[in-house]
Image 1 (spheres, rainbow, N blue to C red):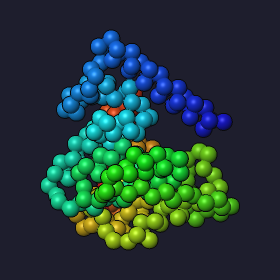
Image 2: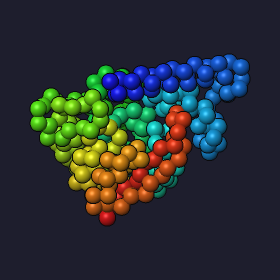
Image 3: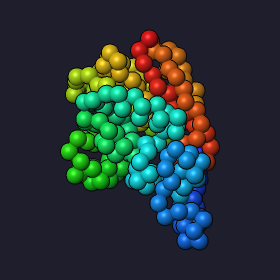
Image 4: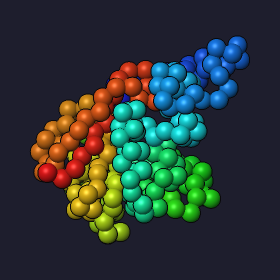
Amino acid sequence: MKSSALATAKRAYASGARGVGKVLTRVRLLPEDPPPRDSRLKHWAYSLTRAHDSIGISELDVPWWTYDAIDHVEAWLADRDGVRAFEWGSGASTIWLAKRVESVHSVEHHRGFGEMMQANLAGTANATVEIVEAVESDEPKVPSAKEGHGGLDFAPYVERIHEIGGTYDLIVVDGRAREACLLAALDHLAADGIVVFDNTRRRRYQEAIDAAPVRAQAYRGLTPTLPYPDQTSIVTPA
């Protein structure tokens, strides 16, 4: 019941924000085109009109991380060539990374969303979105703590990185079963690579970072489309 109410509230917020954005654009209180990202408050205000719209967010040329984390990762990428990226959880970040790395392989647990992303990235040769759904299980090997996901095993989703193999310079943890994803990521992270772990204000994610052999820098603050501050952490091996 709580999960359903939260989903309804999110849909209502997103719909309302997009509607207000259309009105403000029509009366010229918002520009037709997004402000540059270095005009942070203006960019953030404009982004609220794309709430919960991954393709809309990608049109602002940002992933769905905090602005400070975006700045950090963009600066990190600027010093490197041939970056290989892996993601748990596709979306605006997939499109953003595809413009900046040699290749990005994204694993998505939600079939409908994954198929939408596949269609939008059909002409992008260096981006792959692979759908790996959870399987029903009375005793999940890798459960998800997210409400409504009881009785689902995310082991195939988490372990897909092991099946693909190899190392990655940048790994994004922004999907389901993130605690398990973090540990799996460390087995495939290049020596000087980074892990982008999103939404680390959540206690279970911070506890997972604290328990792992890693260092983390938290970037808390404004996030595109969100009306409240959030936190994205950049994680490296200890």
